[in-house]
Length: 288
Ligand SMILES: NC(=O)c1ccc[n+]([C@@H]2O[C@H](COP(=O)([O-])OP(=O)(O)OC[C@H]3O[C@@H](n4cnc5c(N)ncnc54)[C@H](OP(=O)(O)O)[C@@H]3O)[C@@H](O)[C@H]2O)c1
Image (tube, rainbow, N blue to C red):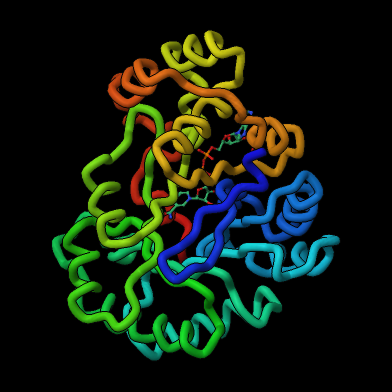
């Protein structure tokens, strides 16, 4: 069963192959979502400072019936923080909000602050500063693994040219119809595991008739097809839901998508309209 399977990061840390996304799960609902997920066998929860639910996720971690060491908890540093001191304080603030001694993985949420996503400035110096803080927290045992999110090749190179600890993860947008194979291959070549965020395209894949038909062919739901698609590409999917029925459904992916269907799913017309989420950067409107 997928919930029992793990990838191994470049530093030897094990990471469960399926994670629960928690964006848009409120702080009030996050604890119950974590408890429900853990009861179903999930051991990996993906949070972020920008989701404003670290407190609730931490409550869930403490309230669930599973040892802390068996869980894998991720957070992401606010994309607006691009200084060493800012990152040091912010990592400690996250640990306090979670009420945990350590996190399993911390990511730089984005190479650029969300509000400046479309500007040319790449924050190379700022990201190196943040990375230095990540390395320090990693060595201090506050973070078991460190990585990046939404980083393109140049952003990764910038870190690699200056780091003493290489990033272990790149978390990127990847789903049926939108699979950035070059970036995936490059990230892997640098030793990173690639996590697929928004594996159902925020839910938009459920409205796509070609995808619906393909799911019917395999007798599965569109989320199951979407999650299986990521896993077959060696990606770690992070489907979001607070609904235990959906959590259960998303973990039942013991089927095989044929090679020719994987090809079709990779190349079907790209979903560009994410409905109410279509304004990229998606968090721009959320951060204060
Ligand atoms: N690093 C980044 O910049 C970044 C950006 C975006 C997302 N993420 C991460 O990736 C996670 C997932 O992405 P996402 O939240 O954008 O969207 P998603 O997981 O692609 O899709 C979520 C949608 O799918 C629905 N859903 C889930 N399972 C279902 C099922 N079995 N049957 C029917 N509907 C189902 C959910 O509805 P219900 O809630 O009603 O189940 C929700 O509407 C986030 O929560 C976050 O952890 C990271």
